[in-house]
Image (tube, rainbow, N blue to C red; front, side, top):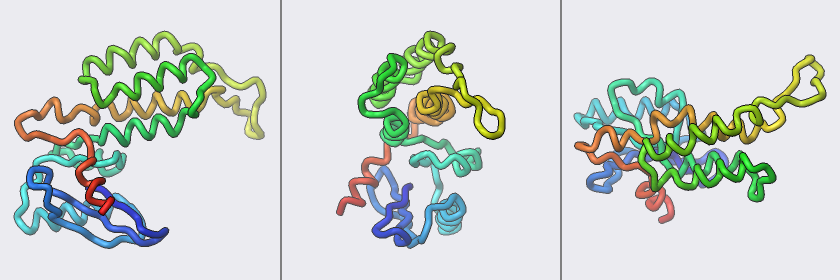
Length: 186
C-alpha cells in the first residue's frame, strides 16, 4: 500500500494484491494520514478480503497498530530515508560507512545487516555522543552529528520491520513497494 500525489493536495491511496498485481482498493485523498490507511484496510476486510501482510513505506503510527498483520517496511524507502539524512559527499568516516551499510540493506539478510550495523555503532558510539560546545537559548547542547544519529536511529527503529519477509516465508511477502511504485509511473 502507498499513496502518491499528482499535485500538492491531490493524491491517491492504493492497495494492491502482490500475488496478482491487481489494485484491490484506491481512494482519492488530500493528505497522507494513517487514518486513511486504517479505513481502507477496514473496508477491504468488510468486503471479505483476508489481509495476510502489508508492505508499506514506513508509517510509524500505522505499523504499530497492525498487531495481527505482518508489516514489511519497504527496504528501498528505508535506504532513501537514510540517504536523505546523509549528504551526498559526507565528510565523516562514520557517515561514509553508514551509507555503505544502508546501501547493502536490499541485498542483506537480517543477520548480515545486523552484523554490519551493530559493530558500526560500537565503533562510532563516542562520535555519535559528541555535543556542541555552544548551548542554545534553552541551555541545551545539541548533538554535533544529528543527521548521522538520525540515520542510525531510523535503521535501528525499523530493523524489526525491514526483514518481516524472512520471518514469514510461507506467505511470500514483498520486501519493497516497487510493483506498486511501477504502477504509479503509468
